[in-house]
Amino acid sequence: MKKCSMSKRVWIALLAGLTLLSVQTMAGAAGPAAAPAPNPPVAASAPKLLTADCAKCHSKAPADIAAAGSKHKTEISCQDCHNGHPPTTRKIIPLCSQCHEGKPHYKLDACQGCHSNPHTPLKITFGNKVTDACITCHATGQIDKLRDNKSKHSALYCSTCHDVHGKIPNCTQCHKAHFAEQTTADCKKCHQAHMPKNVTYSDKLPSKDCAACHKKAYDQLTASTFKHKTLTCVACHQAKHKMIPQCQSCHGTPHPAAMLSKFPKCGFCHSIAHDLNGFKDGAAPASAASPAAAVTTTAPVKKQPKKK
Ligand code: HEC
Ligand code: HEC
Ligand code: HEC
Ligand code: HEC
Ligand code: HEC
Ligand code: HEC
Ligand code: HEC
Ligand code: HEC
Ligand code: HEC
Ligand code: HEC
Ligand code: HEC
Ligand code: HEC
Image (tube, rainbow, N blue to C red):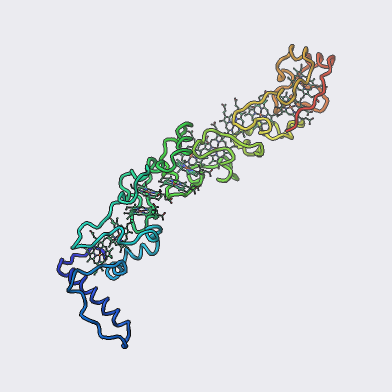
């Protein structure tokens, strides 16, 4: 029953009639063997409304509760919330705070802005500008990451991404992948949703993920013939984007100390790690003519690098 503009009189008649009806129905159900019903008690006092009666006049609320009442169906009944009935009792719409208090979440305004139907309390809808309400429950974690690691995501509302409660959006809803074959599942290999600029990764990351943006380094390394070619990018650039490794973290002291103090930069002879001057097994680096001469007289100590 939605908007109904019955007069009080019609109403009282209706409620009284209903009680009469149920009494008669009960009498009828008792079968022909039963003794004739005594005078119905209607006249004695105002009818006592039972929860079972509600559905005789109201269809939507009982149907909603039956379908999705969740704990408003299992833990309480209509009359725990609707105490009495008009016209005898006028105000029978409860406040949420009658039963829900003591948590930050219950201090929000406009409960029904999200729990739009109290008969289906877990069917929640909200607009696309919600953050404060989310952090009444998700008080740490996501919000800390967003605040402590400023990025453009920090300026978005939680609900810009999570438009339905509990739903996880795909990054590719809003962004293009870095290369064609990359999927949303791949994004997590480097980015975290709530701190997307802190790019970190595991030592299992394939080099093609880096190649999307560093084609030159990738091409140079894969085209070479020296042993670095067998390493993935992240074997050297470990864990965190823009990390640059020290040659000696893997190679220790590959040459006599005297030589290294004279030529402290490995790159002076070996160029950069992706190229190593075209270093081939046992051969001197191509463009290291004079330093190489120095090296050959003081043959470098063969030292196996730590393998990852
Ligand atoms: C005999 C029919 C009948 C029965 C039985 C009945 N109602 Fe009503 N109910 C009405 C009518 C008629 C209205 C008034 C609608 C109006 O004034 O807009 C109403 C209004 C209401 C309202 C709205 C009150 C408001 O302030 O807006 C609630 C809530 C309600 N009923 C709950 C119940 C519950 C709970 C039960 C069972 C315990 C129940 N009703 C049983 C007929 C009934
Ligand atoms: C958790 C408390 C709660 C329970 C349980 C509950 N209601 Fe309600 N009901 C409300 C509130 C709050 C409103 C006011 C809704 C609004 O403002 O839109 C309401 C509104 C109503 C209305 C008037 C608006 C409408 O939807 O027609 C009726 C009728 C009603 N309830 C009947 C029932 C019946 C019947 C039951 C049991 C099957 C029931 N309610 C159970 C809280 C409850
Ligand atoms: C008469 C008491 C009463 C009123 C009034 C009431 N609730 Fe509840 N509500 C309960 C109880 C009892 C539970 C189950 C225990 C709990 O989760 O706290 C519950 C549970 C809930 C749940 C969780 C449901 C689930 O299945 O997990 C939501 C959401 C909720 N209420 C929202 C509301 C909102 C919004 C209002 C106001 C429109 C409201 N309640 C009014 C008693 C009430
Ligand atoms: C911005 C939307 C929003 C508003 C406003 C809101 N809620 Fe909630 N509420 C939620 C979400 C989301 C959940 C989590 C539901 C779930 O766990 O699936 C929830 C869960 C609940 C629960 C069940 C879990 C618990 O902590 O007990 C209750 C009860 C509840 N809300 C009551 C209220 C009351 C009372 C108000 C008003 C003071 C309110 N809510 C205002 C979104 C909202
Ligand atoms: C009343 C408390 C409450 C409110 C308010 C609430 N949540 Fe939740 N949320 C929960 C609970 C409880 C879970 C289930 C947790 C779980 O499964 O570990 C959950 C789950 C989630 C999940 C899914 C987690 C997963 O691991 O899949 C996301 C995403 C989420 N909430 C986002 C939000 C956003 C965004 C808001 C604000 C619009 C919000 N929540 C408001 C209590 C709440
Ligand atoms: C609902 C849309 C949406 C979703 C989903 C989304 N983003 Fe964003 N993201 C944005 C917007 C808007 C910006 C800011 C763009 C701008 O201003 O150019 C942004 C910016 C970024 C930035 C740049 C941050 C900065 O401060 O420069 C990165 C990195 C990023 N997103 C990665 C991701 C990843 C990874 C995911 C999935 C975990 C994701 N985004 C999911 C909307 C989204
Ligand atoms: C840019 C979009 C975006 C924004 C803004 C955003 N999230 Fe998320 N959120 C995601 C994505 C994507 C995931 C899935 C992350 C994953 O799978 O590793 C996620 C996961 C979650 C989870 C599941 C647990 C976890 O941490 O992985 C919760 C809870 C959550 N978000 C809550 C929030 C809250 C609360 C806010 C606002 C303070 C928020 N989110 C803001 C995109 C976003
Ligand atoms: C191999 C790690 C890696 C993977 C996998 C990855 N990204 Fe990135 N992404 C980065 C790096 C590094 C940057 C930052 C470049 C910089 O500092 O400017 C970045 C930047 C971004 C930006 C900011 C704008 C831009 O293009 O510079 C967005 C948006 C973004 N990534 C989205 C995604 C999405 C969506 C996915 C999954 C489809 C994804 N990323 C997968 C490493 C990765
Ligand atoms: C989305 C594009 C993108 C992806 C993917 C990406 N990078 Fe970068 N990278 C950049 C940008 C942009 C810079 C900054 C270039 C500059 O400052 O000139 C950069 C810089 C670097 C630097 C140099 C830092 C310095 O101090 O000069 C290294 C090393 C690097 N990236 C390694 C990697 C590795 C390894 C991967 C794969 C795990 C990777 N990058 C994935 C975009 C990306
Ligand atoms: C993450 C560890 C790591 C880092 C950092 C590293 N290397 Fe290597 N390097 C290796 C491994 C592993 C090999 C192959 C060793 C083998 O198979 O015997 C190697 C081989 C070499 C070789 C021999 C190449 C060949 O084909 O025989 C040279 C020369 C070399 N590295 C120089 C350098 C220089 C110079 C740097 C710094 C610019 C550097 N390396 C940084 C791990 C590393
Ligand atoms: C003065 C030139 C020069 C400098 C400086 C130099 N190297 Fe070398 N390096 C060479 C030459 C020449 C060889 C080849 C020697 C041979 O095969 O015996 C070589 C060989 C190597 C090898 C391969 C050894 C093997 O087992 O095959 C490694 C690894 C290496 N250098 C690492 C480094 C590192 C790390 C540095 C900086 C700390 C460095 N070098 C500095 C000239 C240099
Ligand atoms: C053997 C270790 C090693 C491997 C493997 C390696 N790098 Fe590097 N990379 C370095 C070192 C060391 C530097 C600093 C320059 C130098 O001293 O050689 C560097 C510099 C860079 C730079 C900044 C300078 C430039 O060339 O733009 C980028 C970007 C980069 N690497 C990306 C990559 C990518 C992408 C891969 C995989 C295709 C990769 N690296 C593989 C060790 C390595």
